[in-house]
Length: 282
Ligand code: PAF
Image (tube, rainbow, N blue to C red; front, top):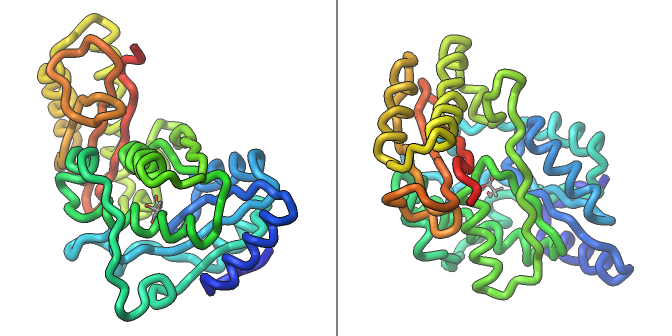
């Protein structure tokens, strides 16, 4: 497995692999790999001939009060896991390599970044799309694999790729969960045992919403209120948002009469956790 820090070398390696007729898959990560990432790598390995994983904690997608400095990091453990998952190259640039002095460009997707996490994390998606565009032009992937846990991120990246005619196919992979339903996330490492059990309220909330829709409830406000009440009945929880929206446009819906997504973000202690589910398919 190659570990590459420089953009120019990564481009050269990818160009050579492409020239030899290989399909390149990319799994972009911020490291501290867990089972969710391992699943993305499994899909990437299966779909491509050469698998690249990037590890880069991207400073420009964190707000000033967010956890950039304390975001969990474990480079050595990540490299071991990448090796076991059959990664061919890890692209692991420094911040200076990605954002040298004078850097001043931003890739922005306008409309769908205004909702959900875009509301409470201003500038976050500009940071994501800018770094993902740079990762694409560096690793030149035919395919890139993202988790559906970050549902909005996946929709935003698909939009960017379509709008900018990028020739990378985007694959979304279902959320990997612990046995008790908690969506796996690097930020789960912030949870104390008591907070972890409160964090299960996110999945319970999604289950409640699905059950209400299945029983015929069409009013998103009633469903959101019930989910809010359920989550707040657990200690340490503070709701950032609960949204019922169109799964593609991400705008709130007034009545449930077609496909819809319930997405939520909840602070549990120090951790800001997100989760989502399609509560009605069609
Ligand atoms: O989902 C993530 O880990 C990050 O947002 C990504 C896509 C690697 C960009 O920094």
